[in-house]
Image (tube, rainbow over all chains, first blue to last red; front, side, top):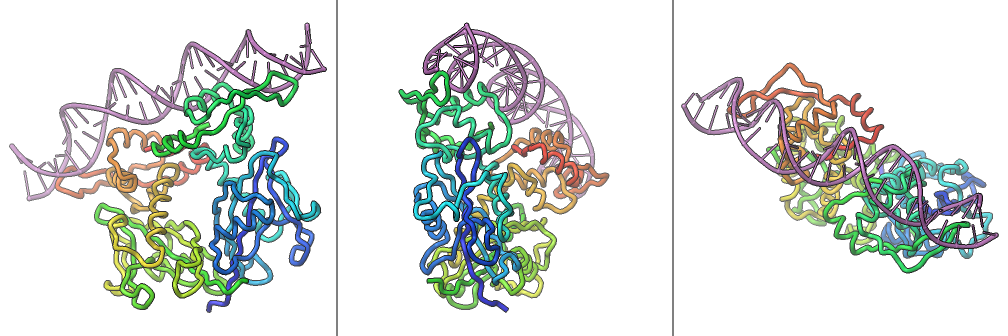
Length: 224
Length: 224
DNA sequence: GCAAAAGTGTTCAGCTTACACCCATGG
DNA sequence: CCATGGGTGTAAGCTGAACACTTTTGC
């Protein structure tokens, strides 16, 4: 009636790289789905919560640990793993900018970044999981500050706008975007400027979490 | 490293009864937490998906099966069940009106409805789960039509407003509420009237799912 | 001086909110 | 005729969307 079930966590690790949303995939070395790309993940260990297991896998795969991580959904179709009954709780993580995304200790052939929407076909039901994560990310962008989790501590307003445009999949009006961000008052302008292209330098800002907490309690949204 | 883990589903079954939001609880007959109230739930069976297990438990507990049911979250803290390692995927269900909520085959001492917010202290981490479900329900009310799932097929506008007021925990303006519902155009007025109290009869309406699908694709929300 | 991205205001339409009275019914 | 809930409109303020030009810089 209740044969043993194995529980894993799988990770959808997102980062904004090369101006697009990318996801970290690993190439499977063994059957089933040998040679296919899949989400990083693994079994829960004794005495480990699901969150802890997810954070451990994240650290093993990327070397980072202090990043945004959220439980996504639990997938438990009986046939999803040909080896037997495996229920997986999927998490998604947001890595910050082009910098952190390195994976020390793993060779480039076994793990690499792929464009989140233009990725190879994945093993198991992992395509379903990534699509689910993309949808969640899109929705969360509108009523939380997850967007800031994809940027380094200091960023320009154009970079912030690009996060929103990339994930929402549509262009936003620069003036409206800036006015709304300014109105929220959750950004602190810094006395620093950077130049990305052959043009006028852009001012750097940083996110003020304290201001945001107050707003969130009042139910203020981010309708970009 | 990976001792066997047991997987259960637990159900937060909501219904609007006696003008308040209630939740179905069962009294535990055995240790641990003997005599305490807890969420209905049970182990996944062979060849059964999580959704199927949840729907089976729901049917076993209430006799109904064709109702709103959604995965909530998966709880997997190592110490959450004193008997061993048990990971549970929680679901919440919305039963429709005061009618369906009967539980044939189970005696009243072992299962009953409680006010969702004024309930006894629950076994395991079930208080956490119910709180989580209440929060989810509140949020979903604002951008989906879950609210309609708590009403019978035919309902009055006052009943609909009461759903929103009960779950949101605040009063709404009758005229504004009605104007907004009318504007959405997702309700079909019927040629039927009912009287609940000693007053003028109220017109019955039914929800038009087709109209709603169109609106949802355009991203129209329910900002009541 | 030119290419490239940064930065900046105003107007209009639509939506949200606040607010009070008459109506139909059964007892 | 009274108690109870059903039903209806308007005005003011706010928010969201559309829209174009000047500035700074390196080459």
